[in-house]
Image 1 (cartoon, rainbow, N blue to C red):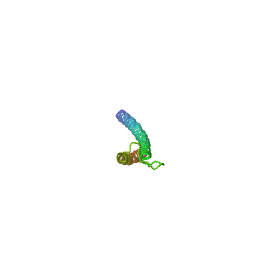
Image 2 (cartoon, rainbow, N blue to C red; image 1 turned 135 degrees about the vertical axis):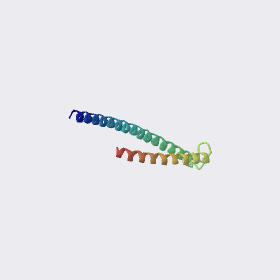
Image 3 (cartoon, helix red, strand yellow; image 1 turned 90 degrees about the vertical axis):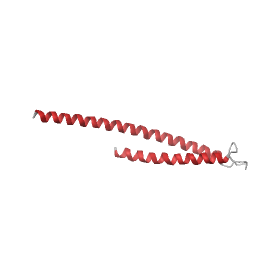
Image 4 (spheres, rainbow, N blue to C red; image 1 turned 60 degrees about the horizontal axis):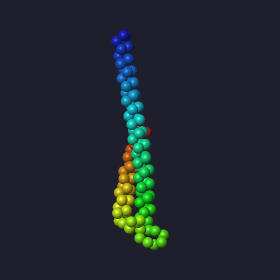
Length: 100
């Protein structure tokens, strides 16, 4: 009986350690998810700025503040790809959070 109680106590300790480990992992995933959300918001802001910079002005002048429209369009495309990657990472993060 004493041996059984010792085994049960060891099982409880193991379960408590596993719970602590899972809680730590959940906190890390939440932190990563929050960081990805912030990065996505920042990226979207940069995309909006670049789109604005590449839009033709109302007065019909050349597009882009520096006149280098091709560079701005390429940068916008790069940021849009980054946004798609971030969105995918966020989706995976949400799925992982739902499982936790």
